Image (tube, rainbow, N blue to C red; front, top):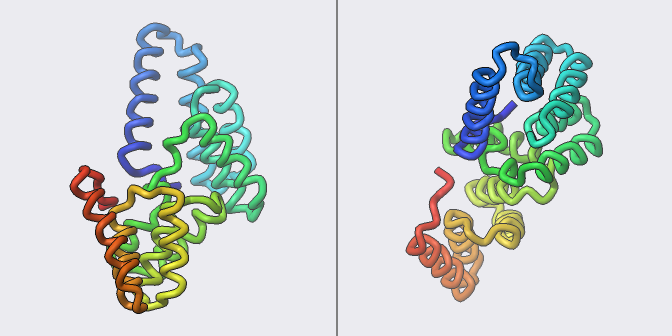
Length: 210
């Protein structure tokens, strides 16, 4: 399951630091934090063995042991998604976001890495999967809009990029792509506004997703 990126990486590092502090304070390893981290590892191993039932039980036990952690709910959401239980997956994912909103990130899937490598088919599948989990994921919509623009599907690109930017208006690459699409479709005034917005964001120090 995707757990890359600065935000999730930092969260994992923090959790590991907490576990180490707990182990130093409690060498017996009986504290809830240590047990919760152990359950997370056991659940991951169960998932790797395709023991879905075991993984689900262990993630739920981890969630009980780690009430301030989003990771168990995040993994449960992906288990439900893999099982085709879309409603449950969306509910569990929203529960993860309620615990930690930073789990909605551009690195929540392999979509952008595949996109940057030029594999648009795999990137499209990843972004579509992300939308199944969260229909209002601005990063997935942005990715699909970029793919549509690269594929010269101008109307689709304009719609998806506009929708993505309505949810997150700080995406430099989104405004650049939208500007190019608008210019291609004979809307120069709108294209100029989109390019101006991308320049404003760049000068303000907004980073690119790359």
